[in-house]
Image 1: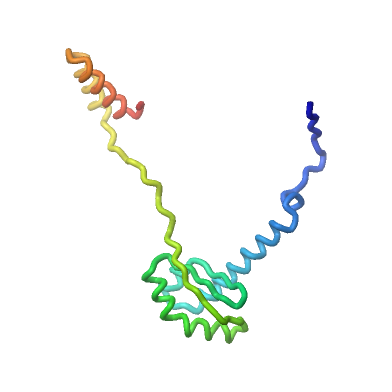
Image 2: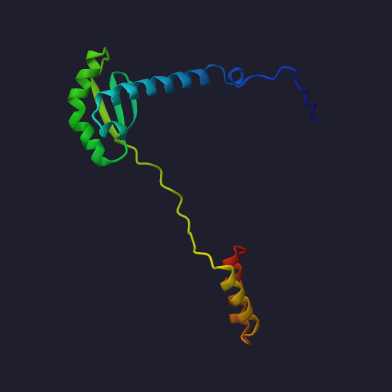
Length: 148
């Protein structure tokens, strides 16, 4: 049998995760600052299509939402790199990647029957001699009411 003791002083997430969480947050903040720097150097509307920026080992990686905007970024890249270097960044290499927006879940939005149409299908199903057809009409009426 395992005994579980309740602690009067629960640990904070930071204490459990140690430095990992702090390091992750620092990296995120650095990437957000870099993205702000990059966007400030890009013309509108191109700046809005630069989704993320990373810099590691003197390599700048930019993420765009489509191939069209990635090509526009490539066109602007020489001037962008020069301006970033003037701000003190050491950049030797670059890469542009495409990160398309997440796709929406494909769901079937089926039109619903009105309450009156659903009632009429139920009434029709009651007066039909064919049991299979009657059951199908009842299922259709239930689906129209959102009960299927």
